[in-house]
Every structure is written in C-alpha cells, then in structure tokens.
Image (cartoon, rainbow, N blue to C red; front, side, top):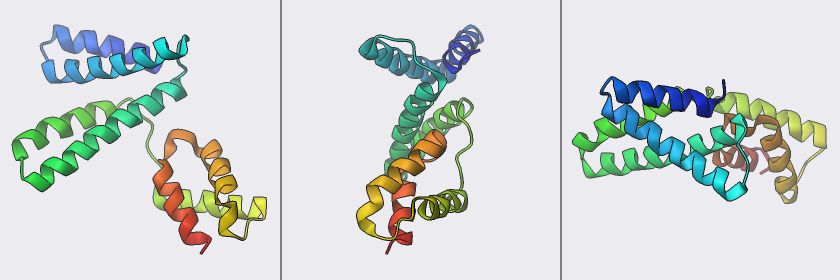
Length: 147
C-alpha cells in the first residue's frame, strides 16, 4: 500500500473516530499531494510523496519556531501534534554524522578537492540519500569539509 493510500485510510479512520486534529492534518497532506498530481498529470511515487510531506513538515517546524519565539504555547501544542502525525509517514532522517560519512565518501569517490565542485558534490550526495536528509544539512557539511 502506498503512502498516499495509507494517509487516506488513516484520515477516514481518524474522521470516523472523531480525531479532528489528526483528520485535518491528513486532509492537508492529501490536498498537497493531489495538487502536485494535478500539476504533473500523474500519480506520484512514494519518494515524491515523501518530498511533499517533508515540505509540509518543514512548514510546521517553521511555525513551531515562530510560536516559540512569540511565547504562544497554546499554538505550539497543536503544531507539535501535527508534526508528530506527519512523521509517522516519513522514514527516519539520517543524523548529521551519517550524512557526513556519505559526503566524505562522495568526496573521495569523485576526487573533489575544491569548493568550485560543490554543485557536483551536492547533486551526487542528494541523488544517493534523497529524502533522508534536507539539502541545507548537506550544504552545511559540504561547505565545512571543502574549506
């Protein structure tokens, strides 16, 4: 069963059981997935759905950061609960140390020694680890290692 199908099934279950917050975040995720499917004209694969869910999770994380700065504990609870729900459908992210190992291996494999090859290195690393980390983490590690 695909991620989209799991989300749809869980959304209906949450709706029937009266778990409104869970149902709402899953509806939002399904809407985001459907919008991309309409734009591309095809049904998305799980890896593409993961990217969409990561993007939505990143929006929630940004909101959590803002609410924390503003001292809005009432809104933090809801956002954290939404993030927890979305995280169920995403594979565990790699740690920085795991990403660093991948980057170091790619540097050796590609024979990269200078910062001007950062784009080639980033592309190769992201192709290997895909949605298991975000681009900023990779960028920061690459910048650190190619100084």
